[in-house]
Length: 236
Ligand code: AMP
Image 1 (cartoon, helix red, strand yellow):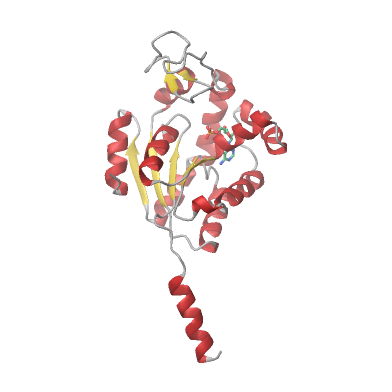
Image 2: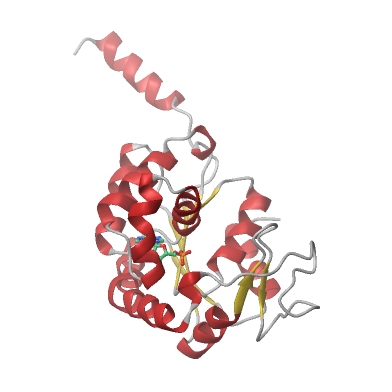
């Protein structure tokens, strides 16, 4: 290769814009508090919060082909196929708002997804992701999921066991009747926890080997967890 060409390639590589933040991945069982913490950290860092569950639910509400395909598995508490999810994430990460970093919540959830993500991050020139596992015991998770109620208008989340609304079944902020997610019913909760144990929990060992893995006690008060995350990620 001519010297000039080699120099130009080296120059182009050096000038390639690097993302401001490494990709962040929040791991943890359903109900571990990933979504709550992800919203807070993303707003402080100014990066997009990419929740595969939220994307699927938005598609299900709009009855898109993806939503119609995923809804039955979601309502039963089963995982949607790796191919569908990997394609959806590849698409989302191509959008310009992901250039300076992003936080993945609820993805990857299987080893096949973790491998696909690793290849994608390498292909796009992102560094090794920082992985945070929110650790929560089984009984707490069941209480959190079973008691969760959501305002369909402002998305505020309540819990009838830990953080009830002022008036039963009604959002404090806008008075809308609160809803329960179809997959927060007892039968689906059991399925989701089985899927987590069998398919997602092994990712803890997978990412521990990668070296940028951190474990946080997810049973603390939400503000304490945010504090630990902020120190870890050096966020104000
Ligand atoms: P979540 O809001 O993260 O609890 O996800 C709700 C549901 O969406 C899950 O129970 C699955 O049915 C589906 N889902 C979300 N993320 C994934 C994923 N990474 N792989 C497979 N299914 C997923």
